[in-house]
Amino acid sequence: MVHLVALALWLGGMIFFLVVLGPAVRESEAPIAIKTLNRGRIGLEIISWTAIALLLASGTVNSMIRAQAEGAAPGGMYGFLLGAKLLLFAAMVIHHGLQVFKYAPRIAALTDNLPAGERAWPEPLLSNWRRWFLLLKINAALGPIAMFLGIAAAAS
Image 1 (tube, rainbow, N blue to C red):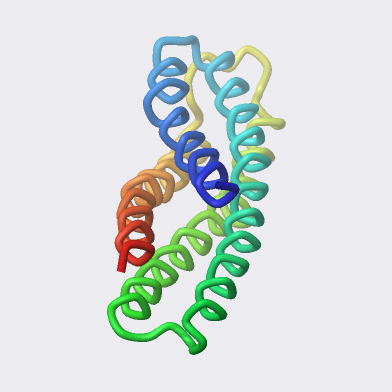
Image 2: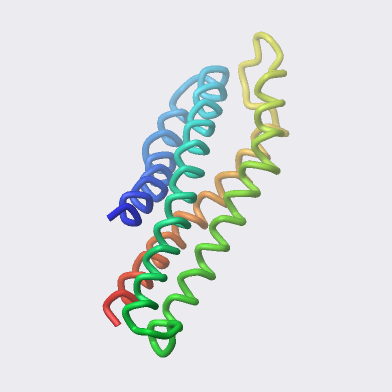
């Protein structure tokens, strides 16, 4: 159950950001939108890293329980599906790491140094947000695939 809650937190946070927060800030004036989006990013990072830690811990425990029940290391269709799921999960963590450790510091610095009275999105800030959002969209697409691979593995 912890595994599913962690997955819901991570995917739900991404979907909320893409479907609710992203479109909402497009309707706002640039200074307000920039600060709101940055605050949302910080919240998403906290939720995401918590969910990633829970997914790693609960996934490890689930795999150990399954291996003990079968008396051997995972193999066959289960092993294949688990391997595919773990590959997608690793890609998602790498993408999230790029968001947090490459683009977020740039976004934060550009947001903090926003000139007073700025009425438009500065191009460097907009460029970094576009890259950040691209990684978020990729993760939002990979997440359900990884989820369905996990469901298929559990059923096999």
